[in-house]
Amino acid sequence: MRIAVPKEIKADEHRVGLTPTAVREYVARGHRLFVETGAGADAGYPDEAYARAGAEVVPDAETAFAAADLIVKVKEPQADELARLEPRHILFTYLHLAPDPAQAEALLRSGCTAVAYETVTDGEGGLPLLAPMSEVAGRIAVFSAAETLLKHNGGMGLLLSGVPGVPPARVAVLGGGVVGSNAARMAAGLGAEVVVLERSIPRMRMLDDVFLGRILTRYSTLDAVDEEIVKADVVIGAVLTPGAAAPKLVRREDLKRMKPGSVVVDVAIDQGGCFETSRPTTHVDPTYVVDQVVHYCVANMPGAAPRTSSEALVHATLPFGLALADQGLDALARDRRLAQGLNVQGGRITHPAVAEALGKPFADPYGAWA
Ligand SMILES: NC(=O)c1ccc[n+]([C@@H]2O[C@H](COP(=O)([O-])OP(=O)(O)OC[C@H]3O[C@@H](n4cnc5c(N)ncnc54)[C@H](O)[C@@H]3O)[C@@H](O)[C@H]2O)c1
Image (cartoon, rainbow, N blue to C red; front, side):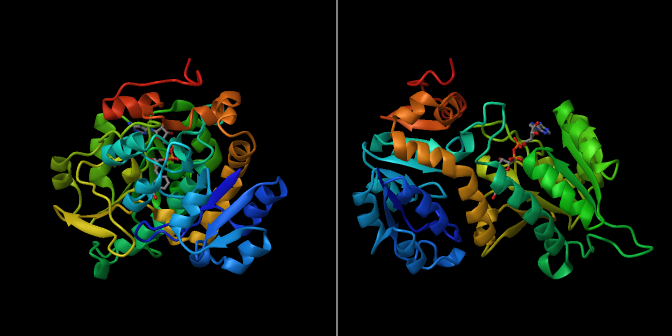
């Protein structure tokens, strides 16, 4: 298979779809790799490292897309990239289509096959290609919140950890999955008071066991969310219904009851966010204020740690990417976990939750959802 690794062009995105180590794995299996010049530079991988691993370094994205059948990226395709997609292309990347009808329309028009990292499953209800970035984002969420709480960043001027004799911040985490548990771990590690609101009882049991009472868990009802956001200095949004838009757990009128200068970090922003007032921001200009509540809604938080994130991402994508490279579309017929990652093919939406969110008909070409 001919495989392209373009340089990411989304604002503030510094990760790369394949590291030189991963390229070597593909090349060793007989595949040809076309890496756009500078693709890995921001993550610490120069062109020479890709060349040493056996890739052909090409001068621009146009050449990379034209040379390849499989395109391995990180973020959803931007306008220039969407325009380059053809029916022969298999696109393997994060897509987050549910809140993005414009991107969905462009992918449908292109006729390509698009496999979304965030909906590939592990066969046991987990999302193995989302998990490593969720680990990074959950951890970043806490030190971003800690920074934002400081006065000069618009916060109430509170030190997350407190000091002896002065209580720490109270952090409410909505959703105790991968993002939520990593955020809870960091927040507790820094000395904050932490409560995690969850809907899954087994998940809360697990958190309770792991944290040995160091954090509180609370079943996530409307009442519980109402009560906890009022007490919190920081609220971290980390809920997910796979493929679907995030549920809006905090409405605009709720902000008036929150503490002035409190901080919302809506990690779920890539699925539309779980606060009604969330809108995507970037690392360059990460925050804005609504009703005296500072919102941090960076849609690609792991992009701030491209070295760690690229490596962790590639570890998770490698087996699936190699299967696509080795078997082409047959990989989707052979592996239900990969087929559940398929979002768009030949002008049809092929993921049930994505179809529902976009109000489009759903097709199941590989019987992944039967
Ligand atoms: N902004 C970023 O850079 C970034 C990076 C990584 C992940 N994310 C996003 O973070 C979100 C969470 O990802 P994850 O990997 O932790 O998902 P996950 O599936 O591991 O966890 C989500 C949790 O939310 C819980 N949940 C669902 N509805 C709930 C409700 N009403 N109240 C409380 N809990 C509820 C689920 O039970 C589950 O445990 C996703 O939207 C993901 O795309 C964003």
